Length: 487
Length: 95
Image 1 (cartoon, helix red, strand yellow):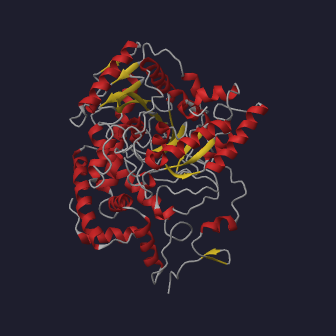
Image 2 (tube, each protein chain N blue to C red; image 1 turned 60 degrees about the horizontal axis):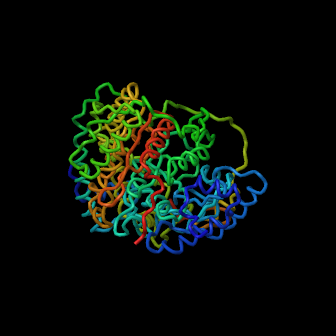
Image 3 (tube, rainbow over the protein chains, first blue to last red; image 1 turned 90 degrees about the vertical axis):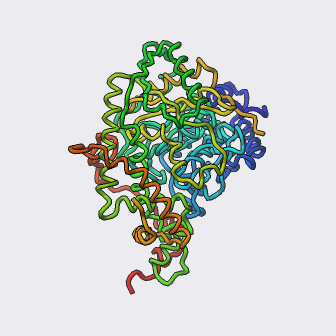
């Protein structure tokens, strides 16, 4: 029984339904695993062990009364920018170190009602700004495949928790790659749904035209199950799609013969590691062997501008969103100065870390008088060009595939002092984010003993095809639920 | 685009972020370097191209103007750094 934490969510669900073990036993197995590895991995800002066992008992009651759903009793990690009533929510920031939300986010409400068990609040780059989880005010998360390496970010705690067995499924959020990139570097599956698919009610905002919540899991089936639970219209988020969401699990196990797969040539850049390229090319062969029509002639010429577009628009939106942290209504507050303005500046000086300050400064500059047209407005126009190219591509292709990241996981400390080098980690994930398209990381092999990820991008609200393609690929390769030994 | 330390101080004041002298120096260099990488955008032809504010074809989503319960003030004030008589307390804004 002690190895229950190794199971996928759907396998655990079968076990729970057949009464082979209880939700309390499953949760205890995960909590024991947390006790064993958390000091080395540091996936969590807060572990909610007592709450988890209480929720597990409630889950067992749901199985007993016949009201269980596919998520009931499954131990879940929740990224620490997803607000949870009565459970501290920090967004990885000193400024929210003692913030206890008075309400639940939509996604947490959904999984709670489904009977999921929250193991804890997962570590992250402060306010989701970063690609390595080194920008957490509470210390970095370590990659379970090699503890000297970063897990990626910003949902690095969520991805590491899934890979380390510290939960079965996790919730993350993605603005420019923050689900897919850490999932890729940790060898797990991560889905960034279409912008508008999942409610952001109760999600601490970073870039509001980009932010989206999504699942991270051991395999595609678990990710589809979680999306079924959290997706759909929510009147409390006016950007959610009013159309009903189709059943995502219905897209599992489908034949992908004839699937039109585009491979954009602009993604073959000098920064792509040879080992990543080799696994990516092998993945294309696998897709072909499954009957997909892989076409290497796709061109998305504006790809090279996506990074600049993103790193202007996201900081601009962040500078506005983070204006609310003024030390007045909640959060850290420095009240030692003589005036309200002095207190506000001191609060933000001590409450925000270096990357958050950098992005607030960058965004404030790009929105300031005299620079708005040259930076923010220009970036919004180039964003239109990027979107048009994707729209044209999806007239010809069902999905677009690329590597998720140009490199495998890198050492902790390697890029933290060089902001632009850090930004380049997101070069493959940013274009789909800019366009608001659904995209998923699926593990596609190892290079230098470290996971390499395949990114599958779909058309608007077509997560279904992305899931079908990812599931077929995963079943052909056997890379799902491959957990590292933590040294 | 090179930002001087005085440009950085001006932006910091707009953003209400207090910075130390070493932070001002470091940010001047880092922000200038980042902005240099963005110069390529200037050369992209965008005449007649509409800006994209967000990727969805949704606009002006309305809801019923219905009364619904909101959080009690006492609950909202629980996270307040300082409160008094049911209000958030701050130093005087106007002297």
